[in-house]
Length: 118
Image 1 (cartoon, helix red, strand yellow):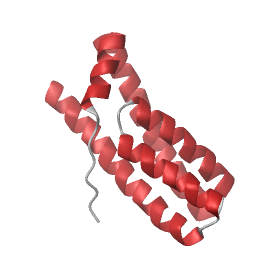
Image 2 (cartoon, one colour):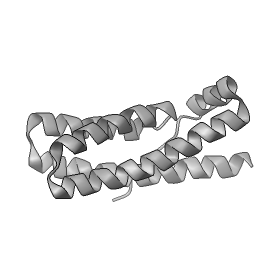
Image 3 (cartoon, helix red, strand yellow):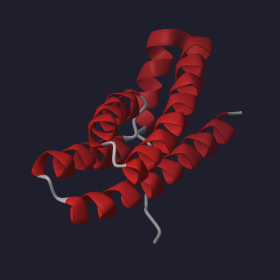
């Protein structure tokens, strides 16, 4: 399946205006590293049955993704927590798979935006 993702360029523009070029690049790079690590952890936690860890990790994904304008990723991560809270393992499996797809596409989208700014 292919997921269409879009990074909120306005949100990134706000970061650059608030923090300057160097500061915003540092924030975005750290956020991307953290998102990649947390996405990997969510997959491990899902496969290992660690629902509490998965929920906590997904909630932190929401905050990080919103910070750098990845609204779809934030919404899907929130959907993971909703599935856990509802106790719906079938939906959780589907949404977790979508989280990984959207997360990967979102990271690529940010890299593409950074390449355009060079």
